[in-house]
Structures are given as structure tokens and as C-alpha cells.
Length: 110
Image 1 (tube, rainbow, N blue to C red):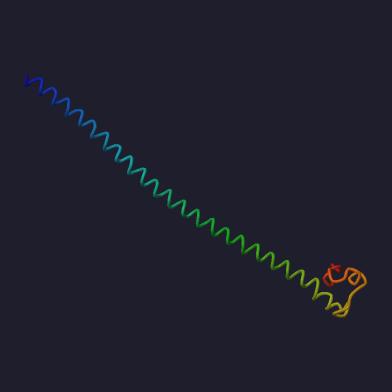
Image 2: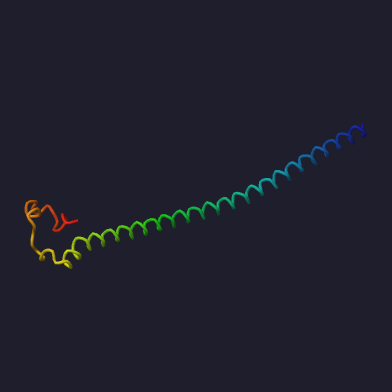
């Protein structure tokens, strides 16, 4: 009977050792996954910040282009004709008079 108990005890100890090794490997694996998830989270946060920065840069560039177009149109419509002296300020051409208040002054001169 003692031999049988000794055999069963050894089998149980062997089984527990195997289970301990399995649990240890699972714990190491879980720690590795957690580290990888932390790295991934930092990368995602960095990418989100870069996307936000790129959006702001796009808005600034678009605003500069729009401001340039407005300045160019103002120069072409107001400054250049007055500098050339083509027509005195406040006078209307026949085409502008026929369109009435719906046509901005000097728009037809582009």
C-alpha cells in the first residue's frame, strides 16, 4: 500500500510541476503582451497627435492661399486700375451701368 501511495504522490507532484510550468509560461506571455500593448498605445497616441498637427498645418496653408487670392483680386480690381488711371473712382462703364447694382465695380475688367 505504501508503494502505491508513493507512486500516486509522485504522479501528483509531476502533474503539479507541469501545471506550474504552464502557468509560468502563460504569465510571461501575458506580461509580454501587456508590454506590447503599452508600446502600441504610445504609438497610436503619437500618430493621433501627428494627425492633429497635420490638420492644423493644412488649415494654415489653405488660409494663406485664400489670403493670397484675396490680396491678388483686390490688387487687380482696385489698385492696378487706379494706378493706371483708366477711370476715375466712382464712374461706371456702360456694361457696369447696364448690370446695375448686381455687378461689382471693375469686375468686368479682369
